[in-house]
Amino acid sequence: MRIHSLQHVPFEGLGSIADWAKAHNAPLRTTQLFSDAPLPKLEAFDWLVVMGGPMNIYEEERYPWLRGEKALIKEAIAAGKVVLGVCLGAQLIADCLGAKVTRNPHREIGWFPLTTVHPAWASTLPAQVLVMHWHGDTFALPAGALHLAASEACPNQGFIFQGRVVGLQFHLETTPESLMGLIEHGQDDLSPAGPYIQTREEMLSDPERFPVINRMMAALLDRLRGENG
Image (cartoon, rainbow, N blue to C red; front, side, top):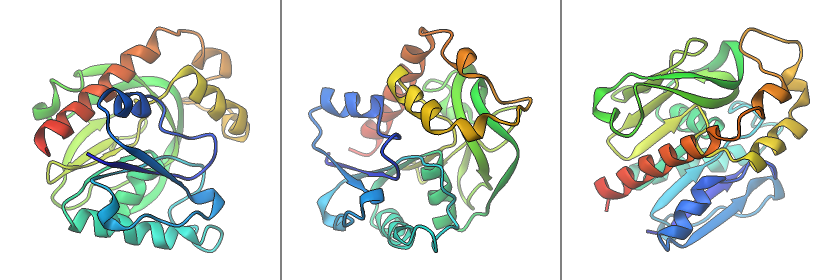
């Protein structure tokens, strides 16, 4: 199980996903797209993990590497790889599967309740749970995908395609350190205030939230590993 991650900005890394990979002795490599690093060959990995970032999936002129990244995601899906996308990563996967990515009616930043929609995944994601969000865009559900989760501010929070391609709009990988990075580099996202935008103090108020979501991410990765070898 060789894992390769795609990182769009220095302050949005794998978070607790890296801890899970280490615990399972899974070789882990990362392409830092913001440094114009070359993309991996398809045969060099079994899992592709596509992380978040402040850019939009349609900003190819500003971020030319988006074109090659999308091509790699499409190839990985077609080749039967496990593909996991978080936030921007989920939007990129949705786009590669032919679904629309648009502005969400609300920016959703902070800890807000998530509802698991698909009962087959209820053992992995609780029916109601507080998770971390940081996004302004959203995706339509790709054709043939299972609707995984929803929130009050954003009805399409997650999907599963063919049991091995997962898009999560929300962040289960967030650690206190990674959240501090988002806050420090995402101040512009916090104003003007909105009904689904929390302050720095609100987001950092309860350190016990992080182990909960990290355990959920580990459970999701365990399930992908069990179902896909």
